[in-house]
Amino acid sequence: MITPSEIIHKAERLYPSFLSSVIRGDKFFPIDNLPIGSRPKDYLTLREAITQLISKSKQHLGYGYILELETRNLHKLGQQSLPQRISIETEQDYLKLLKREKEFLQFKADIELIRSEVPELNCWLYKNPLKVIEYSDRWSDLLKVCQYFQCNPKPHLYIRELPIQIHTKFIEQNKGILRNLLEAILPAELFVSVQGEKQYAFEKRFSLRYGEPLIRLRILDQALKAKYDFPFSDISTPISEFKQLNLKAHRFFITENLMSFLNLPALENSFALFGSGYAIQMLKSVNWLAYCPILYWGDLDTDGFKILSQLRSYFPQTISIMMDTKTLETFKEFAVTVAESTAENLLYLTPEEQALYSYLFIHNKRLEQERISQDYAYQYVHSLCIRIPC
Image 1 (cartoon, rainbow, N blue to C red):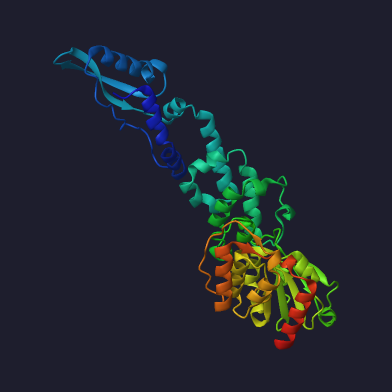
Image 2 (image 1 turned 180 degrees about the horizontal axis):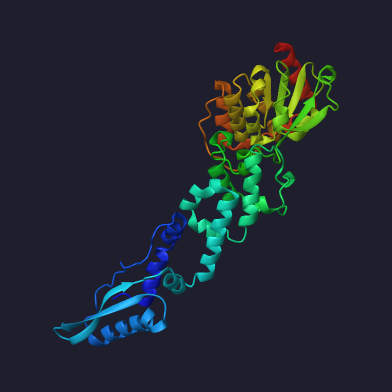
């Protein structure tokens, strides 16, 4: 037989539906489909169960569920008063039973505020009544943000630059609910797709500025420095600005190691990019690099070849430098043994590169770029530039 606590539990499960009915203006009461359950077979257990139900009923407490009894003649227990119907007749009884009277008053006030300030959220309200309650302490500020984006759908500002009268960390602390709200009220064509992205997903989605990754660029030819009016020879710039440079047809050296990047010699018609390991994936969106000769210099290890394959998947013209058997043999005394790595099927290596990758994988070897002498690197690079001019 159902207990008073089970009645409350079942009533709680109806709470979202109740809130939705309030938003829609639908009738919700009475709730009269509460199951009674099977009665206990022994007398003492039956009497205790019925006594509990009566003691917590509206007839006894003045609020809550109504318990209707009927007198029946049982075969073994004789004449007994048994539950026939359990119902909750009014909104007041329901809220007091759940101890949600204060919460509900705030809910109604928030619904009125939301509809008044941002009526476009009305459809959202039907589907999200519990979120109205969850964020009951901040609706005034949430709506300020919604109103701002309605008037300025593509701000192109940092979050803390937005001229909204809220505390400076409010948007950062409420990105989840704000994304939900903004997607409900703004035209879909304004959104930027950020599927699978985590960092700065909110900022990208709603055309806000964010702390972009920096691309580090060295100008290896002073003539290019003058041609493009670069103020410095070593520059770090956000990826979005780097994409706008459009340095087509110039040669680019990409190095995995910082010192190798800094020690590249002066070379005609050439730039250097600091790839910083797997961060080279940022370059994928730089369309004009597809028209540039690209030379990649990574460590002679499995990771170096994985990065090379990744880079070549973006830019098939990429040539590897000092990532060959001759270089490994020349500096084999500096090669070290490393922990085992995971084998991968690298689709963008040449047969020679694939063979060396397999060797390094099998023998767990690594030759870092720093171990290659400057003389060797200079001669290699200059010879390559003569053989492969821009």
